[in-house]
Length: 440
Image (cartoon, rainbow, N blue to C red; front, side, top):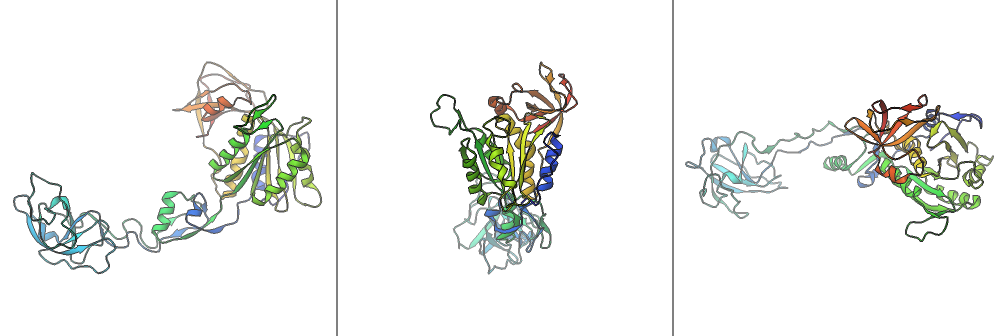
């Protein structure tokens, strides 16, 4: 949760991208840790090291279906002169009372079953007649085990080295080892390891809950009929998907009409399930930009420490931005512009790092690389603004996709990177090295 109101710099201050981001990151704090069941902890970040309480595997066990034997009893075994051993019984996975394998004996063993006392190695069933009293038909035949519980004799046609096909106790991890470090994001492999060492719950920072809402009386839900002057609401879908991609639990709210009271009521209703609020649209200087009007109440005396500041950034696209905190819990709110490309680029630059910070991660930014600019045109950029252009990156090169317009959704869908043109550059020629933000 936020702990302080955003710093102000005056209404005429043109904020840099870095200043705005620094202000956000100085305000947003990681969520408090909680104890969760394993499956509920998927996607969460560990807050403490996890130590292995029991070795994996916890005992020597067979990696094959076959026979547990002594090395000396199968030394020199061949197809012509097989080692004939007495089968003393079965060892199944999960067996507690184990047979003892003595000289000239073998125990039929299943994959995962503990190696019985006296046995030193395992010969796969394919190296035997399967205890069926038959020799190999031609060369190394694929054997099959005799029926469970059958005893008698097995012929072994190959020698085996000590501990062949045996998974040693502790060969995966040993008791006392560190299984996972604090800061690890729990995916399926990590949850598998926690379950394997007997952990049913784990202490993590929860995935932040992010509420996304778009504003505009012209917005229509997809699948509904468009009327004159209307467009489909794509921003709320894009930003909700982006929040989930960043690791959050995201809730999409349907488009809110251009009415300050309605928007204010909607935001207040959503605060109960929000660790972070994201709005899109209504942050510019138009007559119907109601986000400013709706959020002006948040800085009153009834909510000390709250407030949303609307700013102009030296950035293209994404010049108009809003940031602050609202409500009794000082829930952080980021107000993004309404043009589709502007809102998405703003999300990547500001909202994604905020979500990752709430999760307790230290690696909060998309990866950046240097790449050679390809294509047949020079890139232009207004002096004093950091421009983000859509591009396709591959093999150390990046090619612009579409134009610079902040409404070009189709071009955005073809991009896997953002080309960064710095504030002090007005043009970048093909062949130049540029910074690239990777979106994949």
